[in-house]
Length: 293
Image 1 (cartoon, helix red, strand yellow):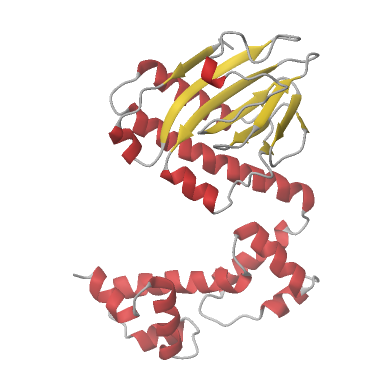
Image 2 (cartoon, rainbow, N blue to C red):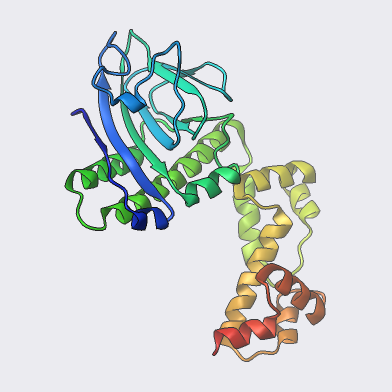
């Protein structure tokens, strides 16, 4: 790894995009090396005894070494190779590699309304800022690609790397959920079968209590694990499938609302219209008119 860092100029246009990168870098820390390195920029330098606070988000991916991390919301915790640390604006923190191992780190500092929205909705809680992803090639490639674009600074590069950065946030969220689910959960096959069953019976009514019983697990456990895996309860997931199918029918056919409601297993056209409006913001007929203007 060749050590590199760069602090980027940011225009008002870049800020209005909603997500922008402030700084990037990669550093190889030798065993027993002073950390942070002495050449670290003053406004990002810190001493272990004092820690640090700054006004940006940062992603720090640790490889080939071990260390420790602590923040205001997270007690002192060990960091192993393959861990991604997430730092938050105005949140005191400190971290360092072990003298016995050193480590390699990639980092990106960033800001923007998109990140504020993600943080507000607790996708990445301050209480759990360390995400073990393992040594993941796709994550490394995103960091290195972003770094390479900052070397060149071609016109429009901020918008390009902000899109890559959002991809990185999505990758971190997805991988952390998959790893956590694989370690702690034995019901992934059951959930996938249930999802396939819903797809195959989209025109019917289903009893999720019966489905759970057929898989020999309690309904409460089935619902809990299904929501952990998909982000939705079984009922909401099945309803979303039906509404997506209804939207396709409304956009591509002249079938009356009652016929669509009947064929998708709703109790009545009134019940279908009420649910459709609650979820989509307008009644089925109004939706059809807007699409076909």
